[in-house]
Image 1 (spheres, rainbow, N blue to C red):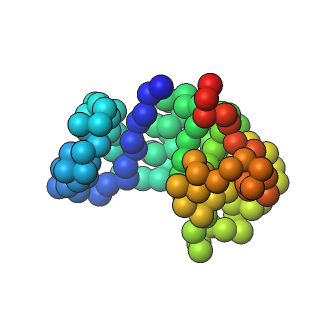
Image 2 (image 1 turned 180 degrees about the horizontal axis):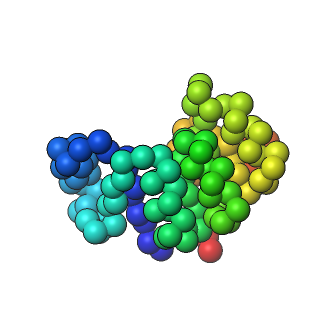
Image 3 (image 1 turned 45 degrees about the vertical axis):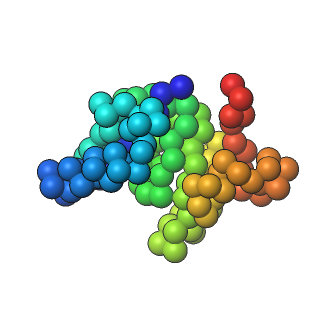
Length: 126
């Protein structure tokens, strides 16, 4: 299983701060390879990078990225925000492989029977 982190940043200084934060949090020591931390300047760039990686799962709160990736990514986790909640619900009606959650932890922790109203999600065991 490969894990990539794509972060939208406005400058090299912010990129450096993100790298330091991930290192300080122990994420690199836990196994995330430094070359799999990717940076872009725009939301569209983040979506384009994700599409090139051909992920089995993409997690995002940007409705534009989620909508652009929906035809290509088999599982999308849409993190709801006050700004995107209506759009995420519309996307779910068009793309049943989109799971809407309020937090990232909710995607991985809520038992499947309880998350049926949030859309389907892939098996984490495969």
